[in-house]
Amino acid sequence: MKIIIENMMLWSNTTEKELNEKQKIKTDFGQTLYWDYYLYVKENPITNWNKKTYILYGNKDNMQNENIIEDFSNEFNCDLTILKNGEHYFHTEEQLNFYSDWLDKIIK
Image 1 (cartoon, rainbow, N blue to C red):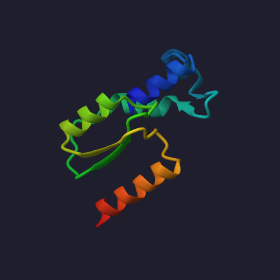
Image 2: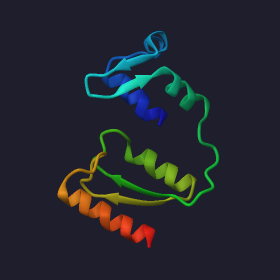
Image 3: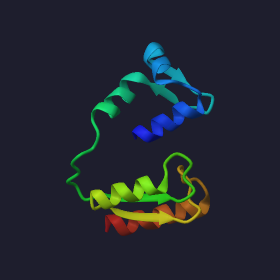
Image 4: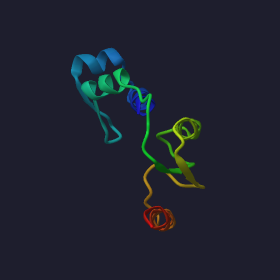
């Protein structure tokens, strides 16, 4: 999450100092950055993950790098499924059908 927030800060030309001073900054791409949330994420990195976790990732995700998802999945023994040409927000008919089928497999 830290990397996603820092990427959004870069995209919006927001510095850590500016976010701290303003506490909340609305970006021109529709997201709001919050200092308290960013600080929480920075101060509380995930070091232990003891629940079985399934991750569905689109390899065209513009919010999170595939290597980071793979590293997290490997470190915490998550079940990772990657949708070729999937995006961060699944919204096309193909993506939503894949998501629905994936959920059916996970929930059963």
